[in-house]
Image 1 (cartoon, helix red, strand yellow):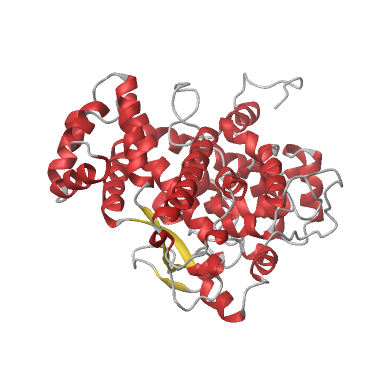
Image 2 (image 1 turned 180 degrees about the horizontal axis):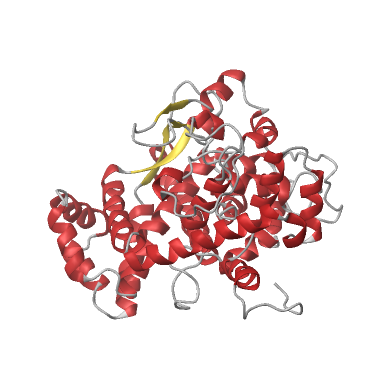
Length: 453
């Protein structure tokens, strides 16, 4: 799984690094990774310098992911059943998992999910947009390391970031068949244009490379789909992902549920009263109390007191205990007996008790932070900025795009490809870059020929 799409990509004779270590270096030194420092995670930039950005979130996902990996490796020595029948050699190396975790969000556009929805709306009929799909495109095509193959990452790295092995068209997302003009109706229904979880159809060559070593039966099963909720715009979703992806996804969920909970409490979005109200509605309180006591030998309400103590060191200690509780409940299981290759046959899975506790945390973060009106208002503003930038650029690309991007636009063979070039350009912007470009174009007293974006 260490092969690269461009086989001429040879390392120096004196380079002692393994291929996964080279991938890790390429991610860290890539422009796409650096841009995460000024991209929204949950709360918009400029509001405070305390909370998490996409960059700090990705670093935390890496740290939690490595913690999961080390727990599985070390515990397997005393408790072999934790790996099931998976040979320990099939676990990813620390460098492989680090690369996948650090890279997992590099495809997300400015302004978080608001920017993602705006781009998906602008790309209706032209292949759509989705952050995870863009991550794969950056690694496999856009990043500036190889002219055609992006970072020319190894097959295992690409497989690891392939979170949803289903093409955009396979989701049957309710899109018009032809590219649509970017009309001024930016007041579209956001819920109707939340993108399906997928890769882009024009990246099928990357998928072909990723799945080439697998047997035909494994390839077919790995890309199997299942129906989604009938109320969703997309009808189908993917069923499976790889071993490495499962570890990264758990680390991502833990970071979202626990670390974003920490941000919400420390910034006053989640109060003790609101927490207690959610807890009163939950049917799992006794379940949570027993699980916390059994797992880390701590009283559940003592842990809650630490979270809401108002003392940062006590809150941090409580967060550490919760992360440990989640990580130490993870084991390896078979996702489908019909898979032959261990890397897709096995996945990491959290215990049901920890999953329910994490779901509880995520529900509070979702309702009290992400869906809070003051957060949604800023997300809406970011959505409008992305939409109007797309509209302006599409109206006269030569006027608004840098030469390198406009050259790609000129070389595009049809309208769909041209829209994709604009989409790639905007999705790569940071929040700050997008705001400055928006002000330069639309705000009368802003902008100068001497401004550098």
